[in-house]
Length: 326
Image (cartoon, rainbow, N blue to C red):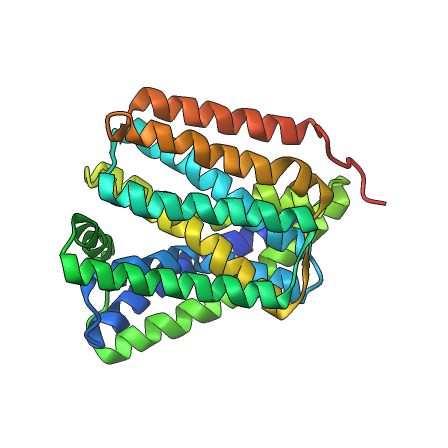
């Protein structure tokens, strides 16, 4: 048990450091290639903050632990909405750009609904994974074309997302070094985390889905938490919300899509019965909070944190879940 905990902690630490290095290297590479700041914010930053979830889910899928792969994404989406936005709102009220909420918020809800519908079948297969990735590519392409044509406030917001990334290398050799080290660290950290998490689940007598939904999900959401805290401290709070909405969209369409291409992803019964609907409910609760005054107040942040505490407590008490692995 102690060894598994050490593996899990080491994996989380490496993922956090490697994820930061990957984001900085990817943003630097995009700038060297002449990619516009709006496109960097729309794609590179969103992908970078979701990179730990992607590598962990791929590792879990390849390693025969699909419950951790799916639980990681579902739990990360719940944590992003309730824990991370709640914590960010405590630091400073989070301003919501109406255009961003209408477009990216609607896209996130659509992705959550899609995942719930796929969950009813109990499995995500390769062709569905490929379609999810194509939908994401289409959404990003259409969004970029519209932003570039109309010069919308949303485009400026995504450009500011790119500017929020500090310590970005500017010369080719450091850029490539950041990317290479970051990707290698993500692979190593994911392997350690998944190995440790499976061991912890078996030693503690809980399901792998619970470990994926809680420990792994919160750990892989640390980049989003760090980005949200920094944005809130700088009072760039609209960027914090854009980070979360974009990350949740990428989590569903890219990460589960890619994992399903590697191997079919069966969805654990407890995730189908409980957590998919908690995830969708969190998204549906978030939308009216954002559009009421176009901000998330500190009081609303406390409300989101309380909802997350209730969710984690219900999981710890084993409500509706298998308590022992047979």
